[in-house]
Image 1 (tube, rainbow, N blue to C red):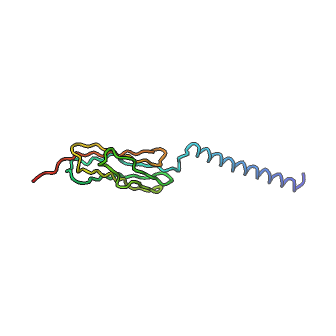
Image 2 (spheres, rainbow, N blue to C red):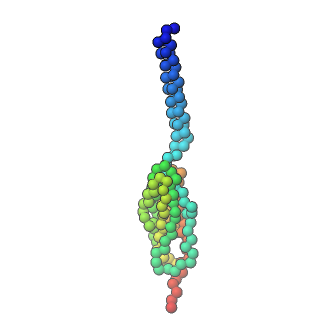
Image 3 (cartoon, rainbow, N blue to C red):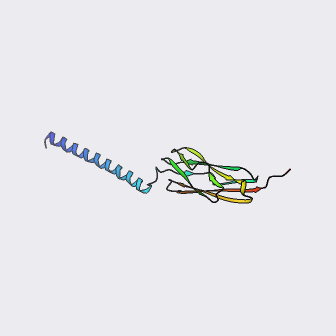
Length: 148
């Protein structure tokens, strides 16, 4: 075998090995994406979805704040869907939290027409594939203000 033919064969073998390595890496990364398709998706986490305001006097707007973090790789979008009563609404209809960021959801309860123990729920829809809906629970015992 001549020197140029041997060099060409070595180069072809090296190129083939390099191509096989690159293809193998592509297949492995594709398999990882298929196994975890939402790995880069937003991921909402909340330390608590329940807030108890305790005993409060009627007559104003009560607020409960819920911490929320986005542990995913894309921005998290939360949109208020509905409250269990017209007296309960979100502080913001839409909240956007960047990847790796945090924020808060605010539930506002108008206590002017509500009395007694209440258990209200506020629902947000999200773009988190693992948690497409977040339900916040607000508890309070609303009593009439004292009269002097």
